[in-house]
Figure: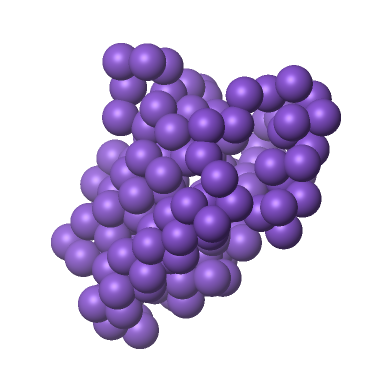
Length: 159
């Protein structure tokens, strides 16, 4: 997969500053670090609410469970949450012992803030899911983004 990604980047004239072997080693090192981090989280503290389903593959890889999403649809156009959906999220938080709500950096936090307040949870945690941060941010590269997100999720679930 990494070779194909690199080939596609080269074809698209995107500069590639790392060779295939280094890239695979970097991915494996990040995966190993995140695996160790998430192994520390007890089974009963692994349920989360996310902004939308984009976090599900990450959650599945590291043994977390997305028990609800703020948006009823993966589409940002469906951002208005119904009372029924909101009630379902509150129920999921209570029945699954959800400890944290995660949102995408730069997205509207109103719904997430209301939900965490109503559920008695700490404020939502912002992650870089759909994009890297700017040059001054803490997620300037894929590796920084993955490690930052993993550490933030781990910290929120270990409270």
